[in-house]
Image (cartoon, rainbow, N blue to C red):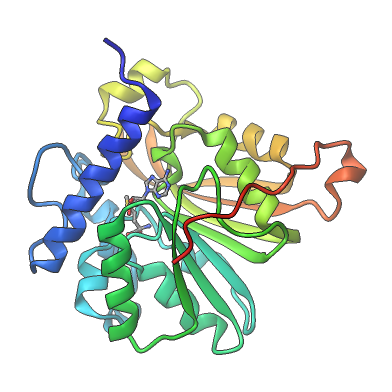
Length: 274
Ligand SMILES: C[S@@+](CC[C@H](N)C(=O)[O-])C[C@H]1O[C@@H](n2cnc3c(N)ncnc32)[C@H](O)[C@@H]1O
C-alpha cells in the first residue's frame, strides 16, 4: 500500500514533535523513537545541525536552541539581512534561525517562524524568551499555505524543510506570494544531482530523514522560475549521501510577475496564527 501525502506529513510531524520533546528533556534532539531525523542517516553527522553554525553564533544562543538545530546549512549566513527587514523562516523548528535573524534585523525589523508542530513551536518560543529577543513571532501552519498576507516579507529563509514537503510546487508558489516584489529567498536544503531517480533518492535514506523527498538541482531551478523567481542559483556545499548534497538555494522574486506573463497568485486564507 502506498503512503498518502497526509500520512507522510503526519509521520514528519510526529518525528519532529518527538525531537522537540527530547530537547525539552535535555536529550539530544533525535535520540529517541523510531525513524531518523534530518541528518541521522548522513555518513557524516557534521553535515547537519549545530556544527554548521560559527562558534560565535552558537555562543549567543540558548543551549536548547543549539541542541534543537536540525538543519543542513546556515541560511542566516547566506541571506543578506539588513536592519528593519521582515524575515520569514519556513519550518522554524527550535527557532535557531529565527533568533539569529531577529538579532540581525534589529528592533525595527521582525522575524517570523512558521512550523506545523506544536512541540517545536513551544520550544522555539521558550528559546526566544531565553535569548531575550522580542521582535519574533512563531506561527502555527504549513509551508504549503503560509498564514501571512501577500507581499509582506522581505526575505524568506528555510533550513532543511522544503525537502520534507509533500507539495513543493505549492511551497514555492506561496513563497512568491508572501515576498514583496524584488524580495529574496535564501534556503539551505538537501538537493540531489539531476541524474538521481526518485527510487535512487529513496534508497539513500528516509523521507522524514530529509533524504527521500529531496528535489534535484534542475527541479529546484525549474520550480522557482515557474513560481516567478529570477537570479536562481543552487550551489552544492557538502555531500550527505552518494549524489546528494547540502545546498544553498538563492533567488529573487521578479519585480513584476505580471510583466513576465506569469500567473498572479491569489493570497491564501490566513489561519492559525501564534
Ligand atoms: C529538519 S527540521 C528543521 C528545523 C529548523 N529549520 C532547523 O534548522 O533546526 C524540520 C522542521 O520543519 C517542520 N515542518 C516539516 N514539514 C512542514 C510543513 N509542511 N509545514 C510546516 N512545518 C513543517 C517540522 O515540524 C520541523 O520543525
